[in-house]
Image (cartoon, rainbow, N blue to C red):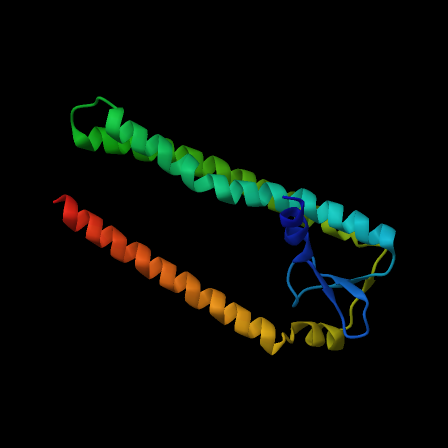
Length: 170
């Protein structure tokens, strides 16, 4: 679990060719900062973890919290017309979805407002060095391609399984 938390924070850090650590708060096209001391690195990592962990939890919990109340109300709602059950199920699910989206947006605005204060003591990265950060190795490119093809294959298999199961149930 600790390594997963560290991986969430590691997304915001890259090493430049000379070995200095670079903090990327938003995107590589925006402002990036050198992190020279270990104390600054720990401070920035802790800050990024405080943002990324709740954000990941909100993303993971959003689907079940939106779907489950709707499914329960649809199946056990007790309202006779199907349209009424569906309307209530969608309204409850929509409420949970809007609540979680509002929470994620609030978290993003807090992060965005706190970054300038956090990076005030750090030196900004030059555009030439940012261009070197963008270049990814062929090994990383190949790994991304394999992961993308694997994800596509899993989605296709899930789709075929759904088609087969819905056809079998009728």
